[in-house]
Length: 349
Image 1 (cartoon, rainbow, N blue to C red):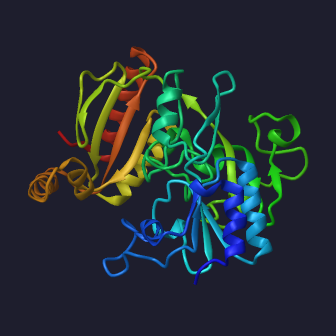
Image 2: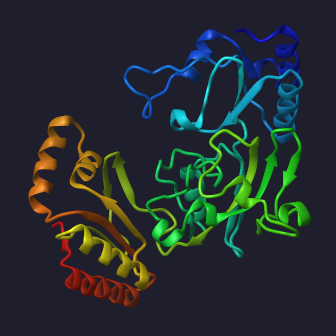
């Protein structure tokens, strides 16, 4: 199936000839799926065309044209995983990579607003310079930093930096009908600090526990909460993944992999760590995950897996402490040790 010429020409008039394509080579590059795909299903059906809008007005125009010509559309930013970037015959793709600006970092009120193609690595680098930090989705820092882009917004630091649904503030949204809706303080004051009011909140409709995964129109701008960062403006790391070599560990930081004799003891410990609010991160990992994150080849992976399996006593978690002062560090590590004593936790040496 090929887009009718009048449809293609109308879309081209919106974004310009450089930013629309129906070239099979280009379309196949968008049809490739890695990671979430199976070995027998690496390609999904091609889009009819790919467009690259640069702003909200162009997104709105594309949505209205698709409605006019009864053509489906789907938008994505970094597009991690096939299930959040559906494709198929009769679908026009909106690739939002040109919408890549950090719109505001508000240090006093601790929030940041950005467009869809700002990735977490970019935003995190900027906010850390200001003594702040954002929760990065567990899919990785190469994913979109817009809090509506993540499946559930759960990340390694959610213990101290919460989830995507709780961090979401004001939003700019192009609805499936092509209307522009600005939620919360953005709609009433033109500012990003709040996602609710005046009137009924729409955050539960557009966000909820899980994002729409390609449905409910296109989210073009959004703000999220930021949190205090006790570490340095630039973390002292050198080397290439996975062989990062910290030139030094900043004061107040501690990283441990802790195992427990049973799942019940792990659960008890995690509850206590959460209630005491001492941890920057608590993240469930098993020896296989630890090994694969460190290893550079399959042989090394197997050797590390065997070694870690011998050293752990049962299910485990990564625990990171990031304290504000030496006194704070001493208190948090002392509380952690008391919890380990009470639950039988053992640190991986």
